[in-house]
Image (cartoon, rainbow, N blue to C red; front, side, top):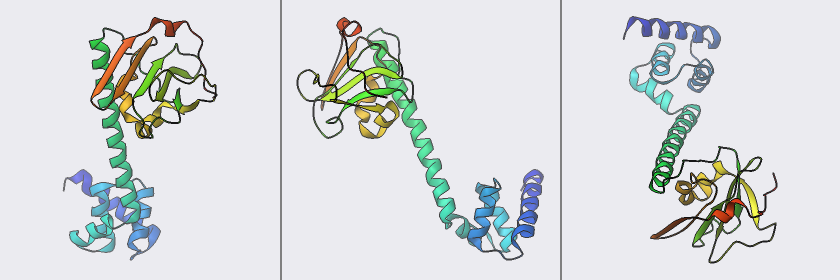
Length: 207
């Protein structure tokens, strides 16, 4: 162990003993270390010193802690989300490059108009983008053949972030700028420019 880590671990162990006593409950110790910002290998080493156990027992206390499990699950989920966002950005940029248009992704937190049938297994999935207005990003999504329903209540306002769970298949297309459309189905993808989208009236989902 390098001197800097040794000093850090010993200081954390002394503080933990002073706060929790000589033989604290293992889960109380993990909760205290978590709240003190002691994580990973440092937490295992501190556990060894405070509980006066070997590496195997310290690992069992650390990895068996419900709090630490929740911490690891969150970290793994966060990393997976970052990977998905990066892959989505790559696909969006590639599609925009193929059609020689600027990459124009919706801002996270902006509103998409999503019909109730999207994400329920219906095909094809259609998307079109009007100009950005207020907090809406201009995208409207619906499933089925034909044009979208003109009923003002047809679309639900959905934060674009929620599409990662609700309908990830559409994500690679959302970097297209206003004035573009797409239609996708299993084994099929069609993308085209529709200049009328830049001028016609459209339903704005309620915020």
